[in-house]
Image (cartoon, rainbow, N blue to C red; front, side, top):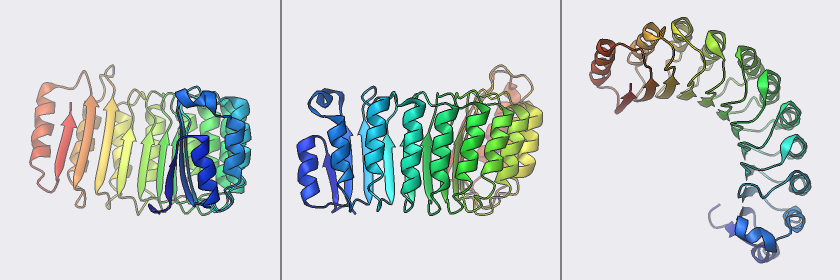
Length: 331
């Protein structure tokens, strides 16, 4: 693959590449070059790459608007041989219409095995999530999915719809969802989890949902799902400021203890205003040090009311766990 890869930085590069019918293209559009490049022409050129297997498109923030994005996505849909699609379009103005068009494009690329989409702060709401979910539901061969949707407006409905779409991708092995700051509550997380129940082959799960009030009910839903992933080896949870207390963490641990094949876990937890968390944190750490196959734990905890004696005790317990290659716990 490396021999076929071509880095594209301007339109002339792209035209030269087309002549060679290359299979892998990495297109990077910077702000300073946008004035000499017609985005519609860019879309036309991409659409001519009938043999394209790997496409990566990166655009600086504020370059891509709704109209241009729709046209480019329509042209990408012509690349029916695509196996890997990476779109880094954070801080763009593609909005719901552009995201829906992206979903339609993905639905036509049925050979996709690897999708990475970065729509950080791209003004995506329920309508956009609906279109994206529809597209994902058609990707039956998908094995790797990375969705960066932090700081959008998905809400409970949009999050649940995404879960339904992803749930059709039963071959997924690695799932990464950046959903922080999306006005999601327990209902939305439960909808997401219910949707992805059929994704039982996941070996790596990265779920970043901080700054959403999922509370104990949402935490329990996550734990319940994890307990069903018998092949899960890598887990990364970002749960800062989610309104979770002792009860939610303790119940979460009852499910997590089933994940005996875990060999890596990263846990980011910040509940600085919650006094009722000491028992839950203790329960979590006591559980983690018992996992026989776990070789690395990375933990970030910012807990204002955690007693200093408890902190010291937990640190000592972690240091004694010689099975771990690395203990990075910050209280």
